[in-house]
Length: 197
Image (cartoon, rainbow, N blue to C red):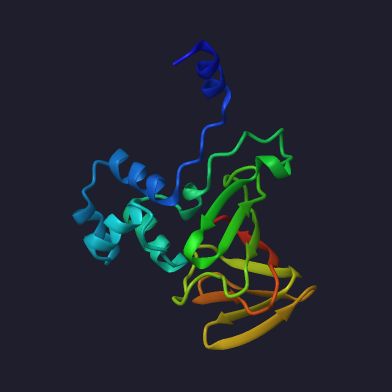
């Protein structure tokens, strides 16, 4: 390798870990086998293996069961971003959690998860969302505001369709799921208290 090549490779930004790689790292840090994590999460060992190799696309509900089995909050799966400047989180510094198969991405707007409020900017392509399985949070309450697009959200047994400017508030402990039912990109702002994602 020439000195010129070495210089370029040193200055190239590191690629963020994939979701599967982050889950594998958490599992290994805890000294757990795939079999043990599968048992704790009530998922198959094959599913865990495929997930760690980014060959399957988990729902938010499956990720919650996995992170609970690993003893860590789901928010720990966000990409490691640049540290924010004080309490300001610049667009380029947002931590990100991408759900490739669900065609959705969450961006953490809160500087960290140590405060009393968690703010998430969610984007989803048409048909994208949280997956087929409803999920719950350990938090108390959340509010969703649709910024752009159209969202179908199920809270318990109730179905709602929200358009740009619409908002909904509900208990985080009630099973819920959501999907972009519009023709374009969905953008929504989520506020969760206390942070529980």
